[in-house]
Length: 434
View (cartoon, rainbow, N blue to C red):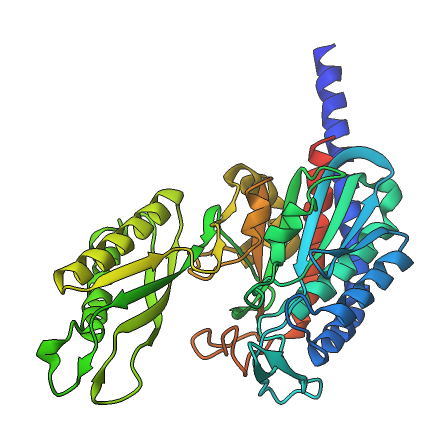
């Protein structure tokens, strides 16, 4: 009796494995067949980029594609967001997949025939517009994922929610947008999302590779404003002043001790950067005030709290020591939480990534001090955010143009791997929950 039971279990396991491999082969074949279409979509988006909350043409193309696939579509979420709901043939969890849609105010310099020539106004200035961070590829990949999964709808054990999000790069002052606004408007509800997956193309990771990190993978960010007020005087008589420029210089120097002396750098990195300083308008006038703008990056709530406290203490006390005052506002205009990959979810999905790309091509990455508003979804539900290689094979990561620059470039040959990864993670997660 025991021997026959063991034999039955072995046969069942082999059948399940064979079925899983068959499904994966179907996904891979469908993804490969869509590779040229993904490139076509991506190039169209690249040639016609739109800034955050202005993705009107972009969202219309996406909505039409999802509707043609028979997916239930809602538009206008968080201004221009598009959400599609695909209900599988069997009950199961709700898996959300996210792509961002917005371009950046960057004048493109790449020598490709589909380079952007779009111009617009941003912060009252005429600017170029470019997909200089790869959001064009994210959209094209997720459109293909929707096509693959909708063709397998009858066999899906659950529901897929496709989230096409505006304004990941932020919005102009006074506007609302991005993942935070989509969450506020209920994108993770009706149906309630159980887990969320996302990917980001990376111009400095070789094509064909996927990188990941459990826990804090991208930094939480606070921007900050520090206003130092002193007493104005003629530049020839500095003893009559309380010089806010000298005080600001001392504050900047003292702020650098936070990372070197307050952060345990053996556990997590952190960044304290002053990116702008404005004060005075003439060589022989000591101004009354100086404004500084900067950014704080950290990987844990405790470190974030400490950075805010220490910046405030150092700025106000340094100013006080000079007879000046300092007012600190953190956050000043935006705050993103840490992009935190749920460790248990990451571990469960790692075999799916390894079977998709090959174990040698799935690499653990160090933490990234850039930020991502995907983190707002991860605050509400477990999430996994991975990176897809976009650098030509054999390229030098130190020489590859980085994101947010006019020369940003992506090798399109790796797009099908992104389609396969998101499809296989979705199906594997659903099947593991049966």
